[in-house]
Length: 416
Image (tube, rainbow, N blue to C red; front, top):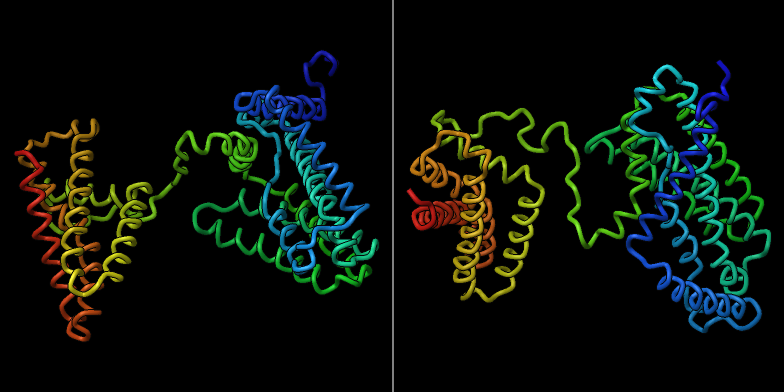
């Protein structure tokens, strides 16, 4: 059968179709948030005004404030830009089914996707460099050869950063990903910043360093083409990159989705939290784990604790105990609300717990959840006020306050 009988006879044709779909997708996302008519009223005047200023910087005098700006600000801005962005491969979930027997097609799409991403990165860095070029040449006295050398260094370093970051993202998960990703991005950017400042007046050395970054990028590029077994991670990272514009536009409208985790951060083996095997104890332990494993609740707990500790620390000694009691009461009220929400969940309703059992479980969970906050707050009160005696007092005082206030709110808010 002739190849021409298929909709996409070659991998190159399939990639071109996906690239066109990618452009339409990005333009559709922008059109949903911005009216093109309104946008033109911003782009056209802004472009004309920016072009007028740019022309004036080349043919007239630079602003007076440029003389007080050190040269390192320019490569620092470019280094920050280097660390942004990523690689778009234009892979789709269905490729694991329909292109499973055509590994060469997937390799071709990955190859062309990386070339396209690096080309976009090159244009982005060149545009940013062109904006900064009048300041480099007229403001900081960089020669034309030095400017070209810095441009070459910037572009090749951006290739290395993008490829190294992508190489780590598709192979690592969880905290190991950040342990590898941080040096993979910061080390090349740090080297770039150091060389751009040190060899400002040495264009030959800048071109040599650019050659070194180009060799590094070629090595990582080749290693990425040979990488196998990362298809699902490739699709996930590709989707994140394609949805970046949508994420920026919807940042203030929708909550950020929680990342998929194969194991929780805390209690990874779901080990028992309480020694008792009674149903109420198991229910209480489940609430404590739910609090710690939920990023929104845990972040709110830590934020309130941090603000409370600062507030208690800065007030006079005569007000510390009063503020401690008020803030601990507020925390207990919020935790009791969390318990009511947790115990009233539809999923919990499947379990055969009575109101009395839920109240007993909540009475056990409240002091446990309140204990860290109360003990830390008691430490901020006792240690500055009582000195060395405070080191002995803050733990029993905080524990007693957590138990007492927790039980009060359990009686008041948990119906039996």
